[in-house]
Image 1 (cartoon, rainbow, N blue to C red):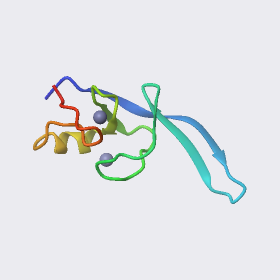
Image 2 (cartoon, rainbow, N blue to C red; image 1 turned 135 degrees about the vertical axis):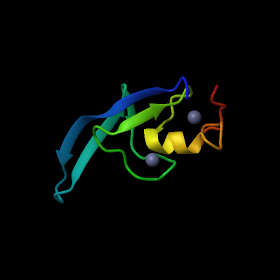
Image 3 (cartoon, protein in one colour; image 1 turned 90 degrees about the vertical axis):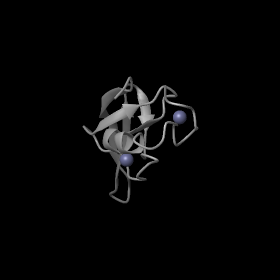
Image 4 (cartoon, protein in one colour; image 1 turned 180 degrees about the vertical axis):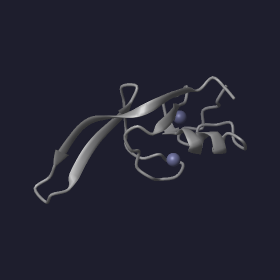
Length: 81
Ligand SMILES: [Zn+2]
Ligand SMILES: [Zn+2]
Protein backbone atom coordinates (compact mmCIF):
# COMPACT_ATOMS: atom_id res chain seq x y z
CA UNK A 1 0.00 0.00 0.00
CA UNK A 2 0.41 3.37 0.24
CA UNK A 3 1.63 6.72 1.03
CA UNK A 4 1.35 6.50 4.78
CA UNK A 5 4.44 7.43 6.74
CA UNK A 6 5.80 4.85 9.11
CA UNK A 7 8.03 5.75 12.05
CA UNK A 8 9.14 4.22 15.30
CA UNK A 9 7.67 5.14 18.65
CA UNK A 10 10.23 7.04 20.71
CA UNK A 11 10.49 7.45 24.44
CA UNK A 12 10.40 11.21 25.10
CA UNK A 13 10.64 11.08 28.88
CA UNK A 14 10.20 8.68 31.71
CA UNK A 15 9.59 9.26 35.39
CA UNK A 16 8.53 7.29 38.41
CA UNK A 17 5.57 8.52 40.45
CA UNK A 18 5.46 8.60 44.24
CA UNK A 19 3.46 5.38 44.07
CA UNK A 20 6.29 3.74 42.18
CA UNK A 21 4.51 3.65 38.83
CA UNK A 22 6.47 4.41 35.71
CA UNK A 23 5.02 7.17 33.55
CA UNK A 24 6.40 7.45 30.08
CA UNK A 25 5.80 10.04 27.44
CA UNK A 26 5.95 8.67 23.95
CA UNK A 27 6.08 10.33 20.58
CA UNK A 28 6.17 9.47 16.90
CA UNK A 29 7.99 11.90 14.63
CA UNK A 30 7.59 14.63 17.24
CA UNK A 31 3.85 14.03 17.84
CA UNK A 32 2.80 12.86 21.31
CA UNK A 33 1.07 9.49 21.36
CA UNK A 34 -0.62 7.52 24.09
CA UNK A 35 -3.05 4.84 22.95
CA UNK A 36 -3.69 3.37 19.56
CA UNK A 37 -7.43 3.95 19.13
CA UNK A 38 -7.78 0.90 16.89
CA UNK A 39 -6.69 -1.73 19.41
CA UNK A 40 -6.92 0.52 22.51
CA UNK A 41 -3.50 -0.57 23.72
CA UNK A 42 -0.76 1.82 24.76
CA UNK A 43 2.06 2.39 22.38
CA UNK A 44 5.45 1.09 23.43
CA UNK A 45 8.87 2.37 22.53
CA UNK A 46 10.28 1.04 19.25
CA UNK A 47 6.96 -0.16 17.89
CA UNK A 48 6.28 0.71 14.28
CA UNK A 49 3.56 3.30 13.94
CA UNK A 50 1.67 4.60 10.93
CA UNK A 51 1.12 8.33 10.61
CA UNK A 52 -2.05 9.21 8.73
CA UNK A 53 -2.29 12.40 6.66
CA UNK A 54 -4.48 13.91 9.42
CA UNK A 55 -1.59 13.21 11.88
CA UNK A 56 -3.48 10.58 13.80
CA UNK A 57 -1.14 7.74 14.66
CA UNK A 58 -1.81 4.03 15.02
CA UNK A 59 0.24 0.87 15.25
CA UNK A 60 1.40 -0.09 11.81
CA UNK A 61 -0.10 -3.57 12.08
CA UNK A 62 -3.45 -2.16 13.27
CA UNK A 63 -3.51 0.39 10.46
CA UNK A 64 -2.70 -2.16 7.78
CA UNK A 65 -5.44 -4.47 8.94
CA UNK A 66 -7.96 -1.66 9.17
CA UNK A 67 -7.16 -0.30 5.73
CA UNK A 68 -8.12 -3.57 4.10
CA UNK A 69 -11.72 -2.68 4.75
CA UNK A 70 -11.87 1.00 5.64
CA UNK A 71 -10.41 4.02 3.88
CA UNK A 72 -11.00 6.59 6.59
CA UNK A 73 -9.15 7.54 9.72
CA UNK A 74 -10.93 5.86 12.65
CA UNK A 75 -10.40 8.94 14.82
CA UNK A 76 -11.57 11.77 12.60
CA UNK A 77 -13.08 10.01 9.54
CA UNK A 78 -10.85 11.88 7.17
CA UNK A 79 -10.36 9.84 3.99
CA UNK A 80 -6.96 8.27 3.45
CA UNK A 81 -5.90 9.18 -0.04
ZN1 LIG B 1 -3.03 -0.72 17.76
ZN1 LIG C 1 -7.49 11.32 11.77
